[in-house]
Image (tube, rainbow, N blue to C red; front, top):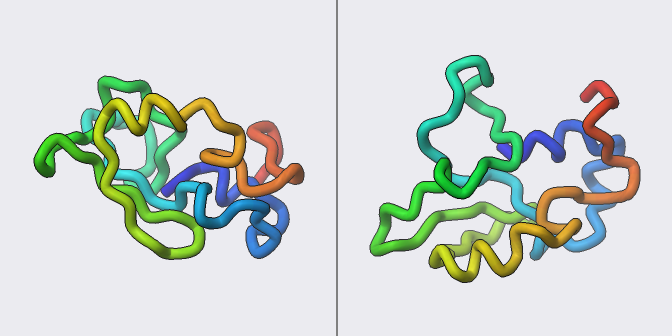
Length: 93
């Protein structure tokens, strides 16, 4: 699960639900993380194992299958990880 979804103080007020990731398929996560959380993974942790694509569930509950180049193009967009301006890593979920 996108860790930032838990830190959003009002998840229902997601600015761009079709662009914000809710669940992301990753691999090789650090064992110190709970199984349900994914802090934005580094590129090596992304799982492009379905025909060279990674599966993502977006906040509006549609599924996308992205190739690595497509993921790299959108991963730095704020709305990809942060559902709204009330989201903060330092706040408690």
